[in-house]
Amino acid sequence: MKAVAVILIAVGVGIMIWGGFGFKTRQKVVDAGPIHISQDKTHNMPYGPVAGAVLALGRMALLLKGKS
Image (cartoon, rainbow, N blue to C red):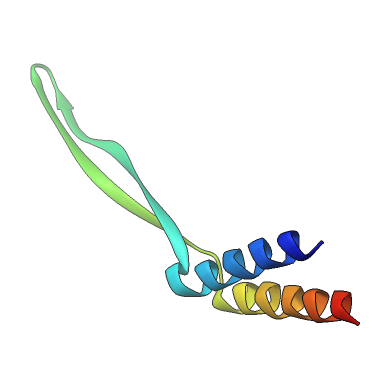
């Protein structure tokens, strides 16, 4: 139980630090005969710092409850 709580605390802190992840997609801009032009577009997906804080604090409470 303590190991799970410690791992989840680390995950919560990581979420607060990094805040999200991003990925890229390639989109065709021009496709005229032999000419092909594409553009890379970056998409960001935020985790939400509040979710990370709630996760970390909840797991700390779980860890402290296990000690009593």
